[in-house]
Image 1 (tube, rainbow, N blue to C red):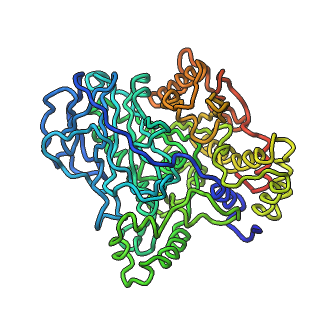
Image 2 (image 1 turned 30 degrees about the vertical axis):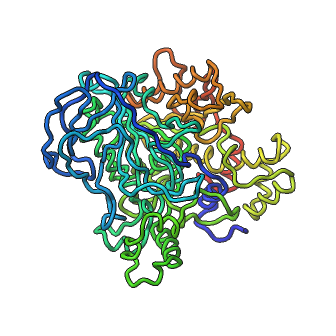
Image 3 (image 1 turned 90 degrees about the horizontal axis):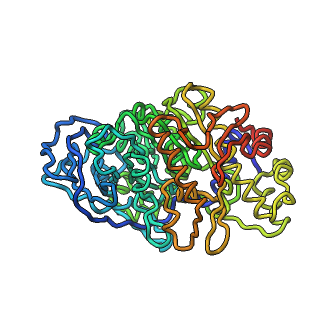
Length: 567
């Protein structure tokens, strides 16, 4: 499709890249709670766990034995696993069901006695990637805590708060790797960094990001969409109120996420509603895409009009009367498999510029210095889309056809920047093109915008480690760095990590942990990580060995500035 009239070429090329890939963080699965006893637990009580409120609203007894912690909603009992206490499935907000569907999260109900926190909460409703069937439950707003044994009796520890990926339509905090091990297992990170690790679930797809004028009319701020983002804000507020009881320091909270979780992290940096809820941010393979409210509402209104509620006199009542499975079937989401045409992504589920949660576009907010100014780490992987391309080409002609179909009159410039002869195969050229367009070059723009508008430091990384597997070398594809951040390399049956991989994992956990603790990833004995310099595009290369560099895909990103007017 030819590129016609548009907001800007760059604004539409980034959604195009998303439309050609299946971003990671998806899939489904659930972990299982462990068991154990002994050790020392935390005490005390916090405040509200949802959107704020009276910290004395629940009568909570003083913990009477190790492993029991008082939250503002009631007591929870964890399990001692290794050298960490683990608390799973703690509600941080009320179930967003019935009349609370498509409403901001409300406070979790109080409970009597001691709540067992050995099992993960339900996944939020989504389509299972393998079976293509609906899974999950709307009563899904829960979080998990890993706290080193004795944390509540020591000086407050930094908090590492993680937001999972999955295109804002799938994924969960209990998602598993091939072989069944937990992806986001906070135990090694908590124990090695002496930190409290938190992972969360949040509303996804139509239940988390549906924008409609009828929904906007229900709110005093005329906002719709962004319910999943408000869940994340509620979970951060829960941390502010409650994490001290687990030994965490509410003044030192690192908000970090991967893929859609990184997108959400950057969006919360731009949201006034998240002000003061975190002290640093870290975005792994994220971006700043968002849709103006009017466009999102118009696109999603069209989708509702085509659904079985399209002719209903009260469309909201009809939609709220649907089961979650019915909504997933009638208003499905897409991470990006499909068209190669250039166009708006207004009908996709994600952040909406609603004037309330997100007053204006995230990158524009950064450039104006109107964001929550905190230290930032941002980075991408060397082979982002090596395993995520929806389009496969095997010949030069196929490659040129895809580029021509995608970029129309700009295709000659794109092909000049990515000559197939510079890559082992035409597919490798296509992967490089869209990896830069979707991840590497937007990350440079983000780093420049934030570094140019705040005094707090910015750090950039480029993860290029290619691990060994039973099938050979594994590319540094989208989400692979998570295996190092959570040190789960040894939990995948076909992986064969060598000493250099484990050393890199330990180093990355150290960088992430120190950044959460101090706002600076550097530390004694660690390879130096220079602060970001926009003129030099300084960064650290996460590989074996670790090194410093200047200019991530510089020639290609410079070309995109000329081709697409990228900032």
